[in-house]
Structure formats: C-alpha cells, structure tokens
Image 1 (cartoon, rainbow, N blue to C red):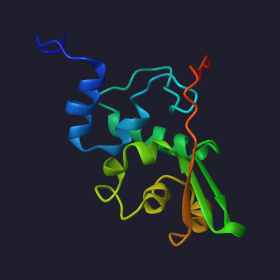
Image 2 (image 1 turned 180 degrees about the vertical axis):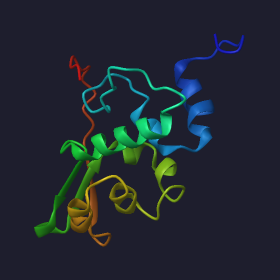
Image 3 (image 1 turned 45 degrees about the vertical axis):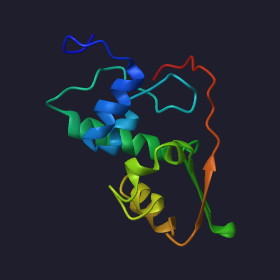
Image 4 (image 1 turned 45 degrees about the horizontal axis):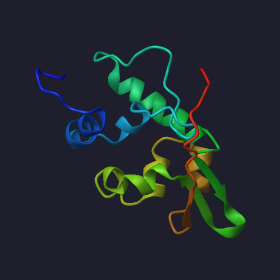
Length: 133
C-alpha cells in the first residue's frame, strides 16, 4: 500500500520511480540477483541522496562485472542492465552508453573509454545473491 493505493513493487518501480528521470536509481533498486548493484548497509536518505547516488554510481562502474575495456579488440563491455533500460540512460543522460559510464570513472579509466568502440553486454546473473557489503 502506497498513499492508500495497492501497487506492486514492479509497477511502483516502472510507473513511478523510473518516470522521475534519474538513471542512477538503478543502483538503488535491486532484486537481489548477483548482477544487481550491491546495496549499501545504510539506507539512502533524502538529505544526502545526491552524494549517495554518485557514490553508488562510481562503485558500480569500478566493478569489473559491470565495466571492462578491451582496447585490443576496441570493445567496451557493460552490464546488461543498460540493455534492459536503454531509455533511462541514453539519450536522457548522455549521448551513448560509453559517455554515460565516463561520468563515473577515474580520469585514467575515462581515457580508455573510446566512444567509437563497440559495446557488448555482460550477461546478467539472475542467481539470488547471498553477499553482504
């Protein structure tokens, strides 16, 4: 029950939260699969949400399971989450997926992310995770 209305979590995510237009929400929503972004131990807060989403974005892209660059084959590998929700990232937030990723990585990694590289998606592991951060 949200605001006196009965709504599924799926519908709330897709009909309410995603409609806000904030792509980083994907690092805060989670189905507990191995490939999902790991949730922090502390809940997100209104007062610090901007910094918390920025932190989670950087943590997401720092993990090889979400971003890899193969310069010899001119390929960037990205989490399949980008293929699931492309309209949440491009063109709303950046010109392309690589430009989006560049916003959240170190300058050294950003330099290796050539926007002319092909993109391949890292298959999503839907196994239920049993990890803690």
